Length: 197
Image 1 (tube, rainbow, N blue to C red):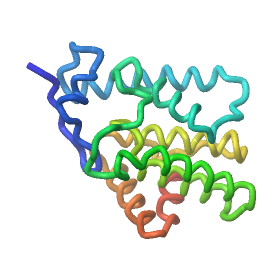
Image 2: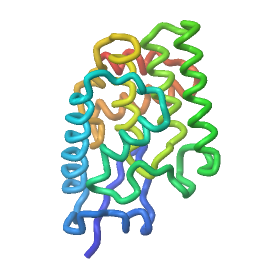
Image 3: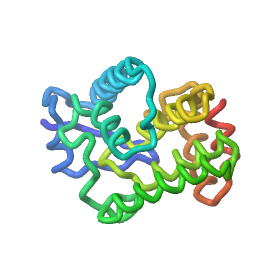
Image 4: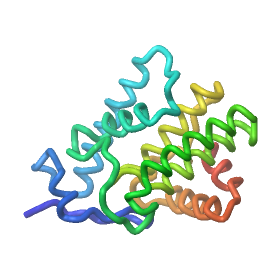
């Protein structure tokens, strides 16, 4: 019997080839997968905190390495741009170009103070998750990137994200998804409020 996954609203289903990238073959349920992924993410957070100063937050190398560290114990494809179409995100062949454009735009926003720091950070987070660079873990990756940007680029406190993991179905997850949909329409205020709730 293989891995049984129960997808929440807003999650991207994995195809059989992607599921075959699971390194820990004893994982059989969504609950077990969530636990192993969270343990892997915790190790990535230890790695982040062991770095004295992160000056390369807004680089492709750092962002890809972060995803690999967050999911590399669990998935073989961690830290690799996706190579398939998904129900959300840009066409997979456009990922490198969109990713580079996001870095360039965010660098411009920072340099020219185009928006307030929190808005820059959450515009970056929203666009990163919208590109959907990786097969899985894009939401978690983009939230950690936003926390790192807040701390290491702007000297702000990390976000609280509703004080909830947002992986499983919950009132907070629903509020988060609604805030993302408002950001899709150009209104970032609900996402800013949610990130600080």
